[in-house]
Amino acid sequence: KILLSRPMDQPLLPDEDSAVRGLVSTRGRLCEHDRRHKYHVTHENQGSKFTAYLLGDLFHTLLNLPLSRFLAILVASYLTLYTSFALVYMLQSVSRHCVSNITSFKHALWFSVHTSATIGYGHQSPNPDCNVVNVAIMVEVLMTSLLQATMVGLVFARFSLPGSRARTLLWSKHMVSRGDTISVRLGNLRNHQLLRPRASLFMIYKAIDDSGDGGVEFKSEELKLTTRPLWLGIPEIISHRVDHSSPLKPYWRDGDAAATAEQLAEADVEFVCLLDGVDETTSKDIQARHSWLGEDIRFEHVFKKMTTRRGADGALVVDWRLFHSTYPAGAQGV
Image 1 (cartoon, rainbow, N blue to C red):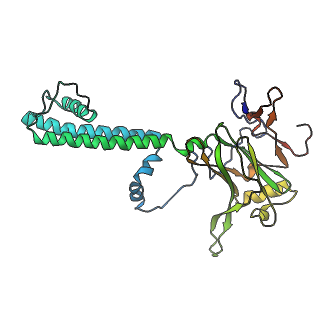
Image 2: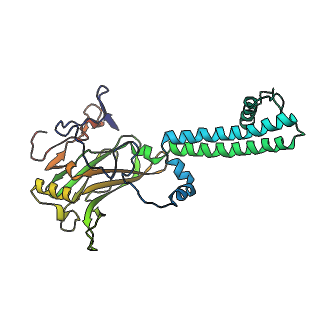
Image 3: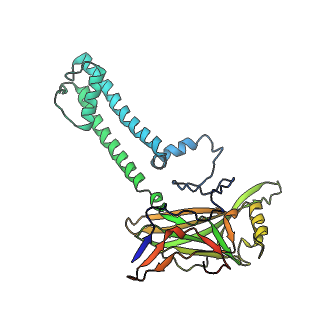
């Protein structure tokens, strides 16, 4: 049994280190730490066919639209359907009296909504001898069914996006280093498990182009983790050792935190961690991501312990107030 310890009068996961509170980097991060968990990459000069590519993948385009735009398209789709057929019903009713009690566009729109939603209040009815109206009614009912099925699928897919589950997978605000090892802490806020979790750590850095034109490009290298297989029933710490085979070694100055920080800043280094797994409730693949800059490393620090065994009933207690907390590696009694 695992208990999540958090007094109700305190906010979830406060940053207890006042020295870094309010610290904001002037550089954009590759993984923005917001609710959408999007990569912070700006795409330019994509060519005239980019819009055609987006429309060719319309499902994912609509799925990834901001909620306000998605709702606007949903409302506009239904209004377009209603008004288009309302024009047909009004023209046929004015010239041939094909639908009873239609004397204006407002009445025709009301009948169009009736037909689309199959409400049937009864004061308006089509003339079965008007073929155009009968065909229009059948087409509208068919198009409404297709539109509703499409929208229901999109709404469900948006509600069940794996990114929503990823928001309950937490990452420490800082990396810590001790000797030649750097570490981060991650945790699962929910009681139900993430099955087969697997973490990967990458280093994104600026490299000089070997072509000789003086250009700069960014490369990525995977940092091998020394951590055993993960179990996220309690928060876990994952680590990478900066040895001679590590891509981080050229920028690491043993025992000199200031020089290391300077090298990391000069190379524009950013660390990106990916966490993959399967949610045990929905059986959906989940991926969460987070990133840290060189300035986010606390050298010669370790994470505070946040799990204890309660004596009364032997329950394992996780105190999430300590999730981000670190202390100097040589400190005693912390």
